[in-house]
Image (cartoon, rainbow, N blue to C red; front, side, top):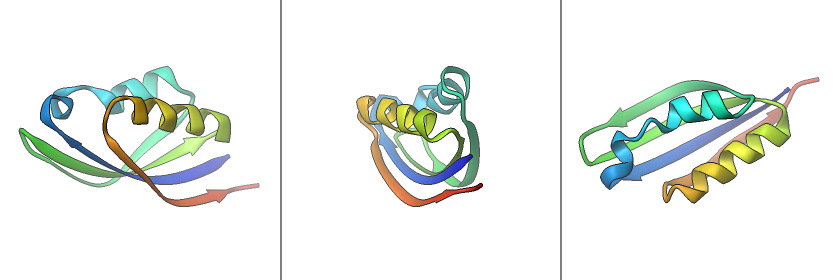
Length: 79
């Protein structure tokens, strides 16, 4: 299993979208929120995605198509 820490920055209408829920439902990954601050028009989330590396890559690619700013912070692979 792989783990990838990601920082997301979101603003505008995207703040109210259920994107964390979609990641957990549409991709074979677990979403762990490390820290977050979300307001009505701006937010950021530091989260960890855990799962097969291919699914993490798919989820990250999807996040990038939403217009959110996505930064991979740390990657690790467990045996």
